[in-house]
Every structure is written in structure tokens, then in C-alpha cells.
Image 1 (cartoon, helix red, strand yellow):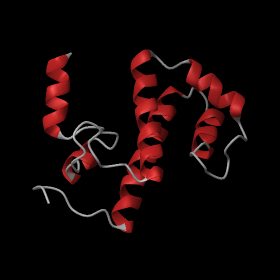
Image 2 (tube, helix red, strand yellow; image 1 turned 90 degrees about the horizontal axis):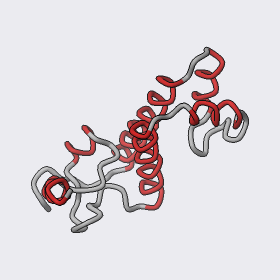
Image 3 (cartoon, helix red, strand yellow; image 1 turned 90 degrees about the vertical axis):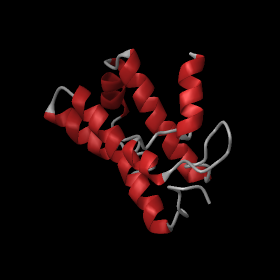
Image 4 (cartoon, one colour; image 1 turned 30 degrees about the vertical axis):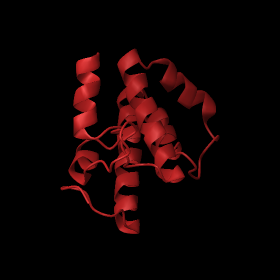
Length: 123
């Protein structure tokens, strides 16, 4: 096992899921203009109890997203999908485990540090 990685336990999985959901919620709250919209954001957890209940309000918030915010929201949503699919925490380039410290700092991380560095140099 690489240095800085550890097995993904159920508790760790829930911690990381919570970080992803909170990051998504915080981003949407930043964009919400009214208390009603903030309440809607709290209900819009993927697969949550209010899914689909306030689509118009959520769509209005999403329409205000700039390119950077939309990318960040997409990354968080994609990471939640990877978590549910069982591929979360694996580097999409080399397949190695992404160190836990990196996932805690950047919950939507797709790459390990080495591959991320290569990706940035490539751009």
C-alpha cells in the first residue's frame, strides 16, 4: 500500500460522502438569493428526501452559476457518483489509491498528486 493511503472503511466512506455533499451544498448556498432557495438547497441532496421537490428553484440557482462554479459543482456531483459506483478514491489516470489526506483536502480529486502534477504540466 502506498504511503498516505488506507483502506476505505464504511465510516471513512461516510465521512468522505459527507464532505462531498457539504461542498455541494455550500456552493449552492453561496449562489442562493433567498431564504426559500437556501431551504431548497438543503433538500436537494442527490438521492435525498426532497429530490425533485423543488426543481424550478434549483434550476434558477444553477442558471446563476458561472463557469468555474458550474465546473466545481459538476466535479462534486461526479465524485458522489464515483463514490456510489465504488471507484472513488482511485486515480483516474494510473489507478493507484489517492491519498486520504488529498481526498480530505479536495474531496472531488480525480488524480493522485503525481498524476495531477502531470495533468497541470500538460495544460
